[in-house]
Image (cartoon, rainbow, N blue to C red; front, top):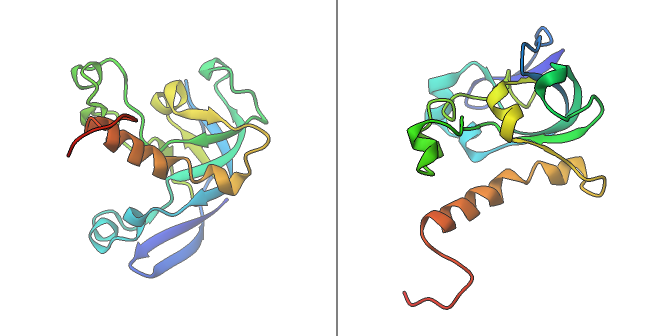
Length: 165
């Protein structure tokens, strides 16, 4: 398969990579669109991770994987969130999933800017979302950015009600 590999700031190369093999509880998704996050382009982030297949806001179609991985049959269009908490550790139980050790791991292998990505079990369990037919692939790549904003508002105690500042 082809993958866009970020080797450094402004240095993106198309490279051949093997198609990932899904293991138990994992899915293989054929990527059709992927957003680019600002973090993918920050020099400090790139310097710490390069070379890597960037892109963590992918939309695609389930192409295979573990049949026991859930109700996502091959051919199902999905959005895959790149971080997924375990839901069981102390951090998750108190609603602090960003401190979950699984959440910190990238749940996509190799990344969204590849023809295929392997989705790890923690994301398959909770963060692979079927897309309705009326949501275009490119629109689906925009699910994650507003979700970050909503989460920040909730953590800050903001709600749809009058509030003094």
